[in-house]
Amino acid sequence: MGRKARSRWRWRIALGIVLAAIPVSALGWWQAVHWAPPRTSFPVQGALVGASDGAVDFRALAATGASFAYLEASRGEGGRDPAFTRNLAAGKGSPLKIGALHAYDPCVPAERQAANFVVTVPRDPALLPPVVALARTPASCHDPVSEAALESELTTFLNQIERHAGAPAILAIAPAFQDETGIAARIDRPLWLQRDWLQPDYAGRPWTLWTANAALRSDAAPGPLRWVVAQP
Image 1 (cartoon, rainbow, N blue to C red):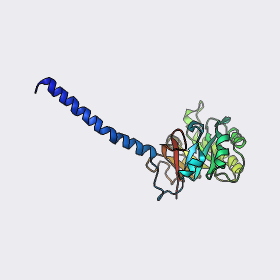
Image 2: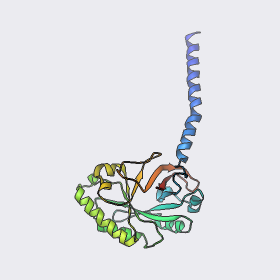
Image 3: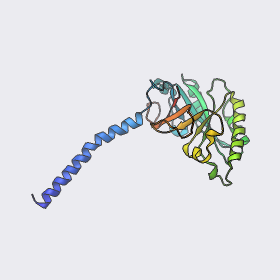
Image 4: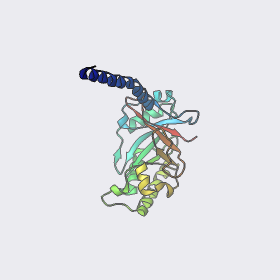
């Protein structure tokens, strides 16, 4: 067999391997974007929804097996999710239980953020306990915030929004925030942790809510949803 013939055979073999791998890769992708923890282990499941998710059909979300939806509501001292009012009305008109989330900014005084949350989220005993998302780290502030100041300000914020909501808040702590601050060990509130497909353990104590798939495909939304399960 000549050199050219051997080269053609090598190319054909390589192409065959690539083509054979495509169905396997496609299957793996499909499974990843449709994966959720088994309901036999985690019967209560839901989603985190915001403007970036587009027009979500909350009734369709309930039909897929969701029990609840948390809505991005406010952030920092003046930010509001532009879809919150629409999502709140649609969510309350569905079979789902609905809650609101505030994205906390450690660089901004707590009282200003609490005022933003109180103005944005109505006082409604039917709402789930409020969630405080902790993602932006204190070290990213123009004037870095000390651990003591962070704990003091965050406690002030929690006390104010909990009086408004009538329920203890849940801390949704991002891994980087926990790594920098160790806040889960210093403030005693239920935890919402995140890790795709595997249960998270980075907070050093059990979680109450878990973002198990940050990009789950569903007929209820035009794009992927952040899929969340509750501790049984």
